[in-house]
Each structure stands twice: as structure tokens, then as C-alpha cells.
Length: 296
Image 1 (cartoon, one colour):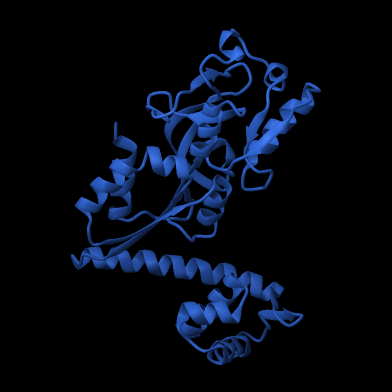
Image 2 (cartoon, one colour):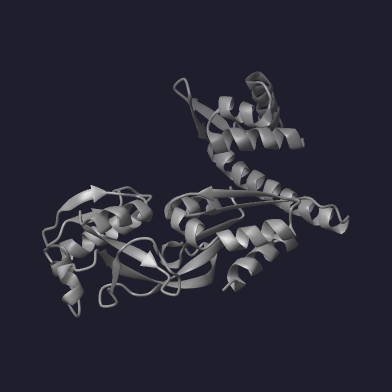
């Protein structure tokens, strides 16, 4: 079984396309087709089947071999990093993903310190919504992710980082600033700015479920996937919104906003670093984690 055949199958299966895999591997589609055919002949089972002109589907044997190929490739990358360390070769790769707000408010100092200490590490940082971060970690496309702990499935490992709480974001002088304990029904009286109703923004689904449970009628005046954009329009008085914040940090310092506690509605949560359970961190990956978790 040849390494190039495993790589060819893995990328075609993962990307669901011979065309995309050929671009990644810098090979022709015909070359990939021949390599996968050779692998299928060796195994004695078909691994891929075509549905229509463009869509590919893994066979049962293909699904099992994909798991094997992914594990082998991940272990190969880890071993090569460890060997480079043994040889004292300044070489490594670190891929990570986190939501925009986390990258904007909590990452800059850690990234700056890390790149100064490890300039030889090939660093890739992705700005992605929470659910996409989790998906990238699960699929092995990034080494580290950052997400709200309660959203992370048990199949992944989480390392707690910062305690967060959900608050209501309103402009100064808003009537709710005079309320001692805000209820869901009181919130529903005012126009709301919420994230899009998609699987990538699970908070929207949770919020709507809260309103439905108490039978509250509510109005969404704006959809925004970015807390910075949301804060601008809350400050303007267009509507009110929710935010998950770290209390110790000067969040959204340039906005005239009031953050009202909602401890009676939402439990505190944590921002966590997320890794695969089968992921073995090498020294330069552990170094970033240490810098991130220990910064003030």
C-alpha cells in the first residue's frame, strides 16, 4: 500500500471532489483516479461511488478506510513534528480557529508573544463561528479551537480558560436599566438584534426557545452575526441584544453601552480550548496553550 494512494483517497473523500483534491495535491484528476483505482484493486473493495455527474459517496469500505487514513495522516504529521524537534530543526505548523470576538479581544497579546518566541512555526489562525470551530477540530483540520464549553460535544477534550456570562446589552438610559431582575417577558417588549437563525449560531435557537417557553411575542428588528456590529446598533437605540462576555475585560470599551446581568435566566459558562481526544500536542503547541491560558 503506497503512501501517495492513501493521500489521494483521503483528500478526494474529505473534499468530495476529484477537482478540489487535484488542486490541493498539485496532481491531475486522471492521476488521482488511477491512484485510487490501484488502492481499490489492492484492497479488493470499491471505496467511492459516483452519484450523478459530480457527487461522490463513500462505500461502507470507503468509510472505514477513511477513518484509517485520517488517523494515519494525523499521526504522521505529529511524528514528523516530533522528529524535527529531536533534530533541533526549527520547523512546525500550528492551526487554530476561534470566533471573531475571541480573536479580537483575547488573542492579540498571546499571538504577539508566541510569534516572537516561535517565529519558525507556520501559524494559521481562522475566524469562524462556534459550531464551525468545533467541526474543524473534530475533522482534524485545526489543531486547537476555542469555543463555549457547553456547546462542545463529549467526544472532544475541553480545557477551561475564561469564565463568561450572558448579559443583556442596552443603551444608557434604557428602561430595563431600572429593573432589578429582568425576565424574558420584559425583554420581549423591546425590538431585538439577534444572530442569524442558522446552525452556526446556536444561541439564536436557544433564545427563541426561551421566548416560546414563556409564551412571549417578540420582534426581531435586525440580524447580526458580529457582536461589534450589534453593539453599534444597540448604542444607536435600534434594539437590544445579548452578549457573552468576560467581566474582567474592558469589552466594547468604545461603545456607550450598559451590560445588564441575566443570571436568573442563563447559567455562567466558560470559554474553552478544544482539541481532539486522539491529538498529542507537541512542545510548540503546548507552548502556545501555556501562553494563552496564563495571560492576565
